[in-house]
Image (cartoon, rainbow, N blue to C red):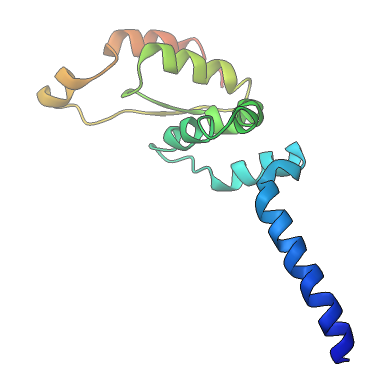
Length: 127
């Protein structure tokens, strides 16, 4: 039995090393999509996860863009261009619209004019 272990151990070490070098490059896109969906959270700050994934590498960006559920959280703290991009990438899935606190201070810091925000989001009210 020791002979088999002596043979398997170096092979396993070499295999582990190769797996670490290759990373997730060998994973099928469908599996990456599933992993991204598991990592994503549809809470008000969930949109940040989608943005972070797209900045890992060109492949993760391409895969993430194809996952509509990663783009369905819309928050009024996002800029108008980002909101439009998220709505486009979310395809036809339901969207989750989140509004931040309505204080004078937060109103002055908003990236998006409230009227513009509702104008864009209202176009997708059927979802």
